[in-house]
Image (cartoon, rainbow, N blue to C red; front, side, top):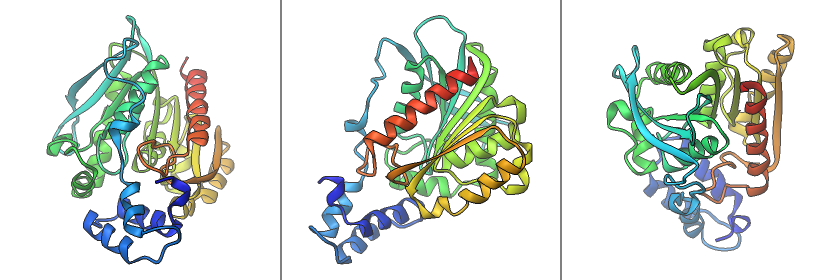
Length: 293
């Protein structure tokens, strides 16, 4: 099913499904009950579910990279230990480093693919799995979002903060650190900029929750802040964030991508906007190359 044939009401319901405890069964039942144009709500709902195998762009066997899982300490986090997906470019390094932070369902295949994309561009990439302390990403997003919701938010953020510090200090890292993330991960990037101060060299949050306006003064890293056009939940804080950044004379650029919805960079579902995602990713890589070189 083509994305332009999916009724906007089903897209809105899918966004609710992704960001609440709504089960897949409830999502399908509610979609079936919707009065939609151009087909059946259930078929539209089924079409929106991620297809990760089809979405892979860089194979884990690609000769330009080497990928492996690593474990590291995370004091103050969920369990004191963390696990992440570390991808290095071919060669000896050291390399500038980029932390890639997942959405609200753990380290799924899409985020691993994003880490590989960053490594192909010359960055040492680490994608931490916030679910690692309770068993790791379970292989499906439905269970993943329930698991992530069960975690203490402050401890989960501490695990991401410790992941950033682990990556910055890694033997293959130049010590220059960037961070990007999507949805939940975008909000983490915004808050890492607050917490890390000068220890973060660049941040690119995608459709993430803004930090508290009173904390914006603590940000020192240059930021490229990416928004979808049709994303009222996240965009509600956009202008207040812009104003706080301007008032505190921060180095930032903010983009809103025309014709997009929340999750437009994720190429595993019809929310993906190929044209705008390509522009956003090229801007992201150029931004990191500028500030991490």
